[in-house]
Image (cartoon, rainbow over all chains, first blue to last red):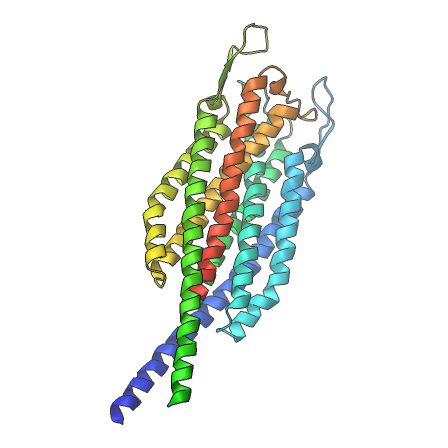
Length: 186
Length: 186
């Protein structure tokens, strides 16, 4: 009788520590999700509101540079906006996971959407990075000139706007891993 | 006594069907991993071996086009090679999961690496897609000319090489979801 009681108490202790770990990871999930939503929002706004008008005109240089001039940067703004919207929508579910640690199905749903959104965000951030790199350095082999010599402040802004997006990509990697660990510890 | 036997047989049936589902998903995981390794290998080889020499010379057109002329395409080849190498290394572990369905820790390790590799591959494929799109269409706002008018066969090859890579990205999304589902059904 005594040994059964000891075993039961050990199982209960193990279950309790596992549950508190799951709750801790769920809280981290919620915080990371909030962080990533701010990162993507900041990236979308920083890129979307960038414009520079040059004070002079030559044969080759345009008057004004906005993100819409480069289709890849438009995709970047759309991808970040969509992912930011998704993250905000997922916050209540993430909070629900803090309260109810043991649910699994909704965590699987979150993993599915997190993975798809991570792919979308990485695609947006990487393609924009490729174009921003080209704007900075140009490519002599393809005769593509570095436009940042003229549009200096425009280039600084679009480079900076990549940061929030790449931070969010790292956060998504962590979110997926956290979800998998929590599911495995049910 | 009878009711206990019936319950035990139901639990055993449920466990058996869950195990066969896990085994089925593990087999799909192995097949998808093999498919993705061929896709990334084909992409890396197709991009890496592309070259076109023009039969004429003008002031602006170069003699030869290879993937190394564009740093983003070099990154694409490296990313695909690394991911292909990882996929080949992960195949024995995936096969081990077919045999031993119930293991969890190694599945978590696979999810971690799969997620990081997916981010790397998506970054490589998307940035290359942005540059390939630029090579095809150019950008009049930035005075970047479409080089595909001259290097037509080079452009066709680099466009085609993106396919295997994007297929592998979709496969990675499926792999992560499959691993999460299998872990949840232990």
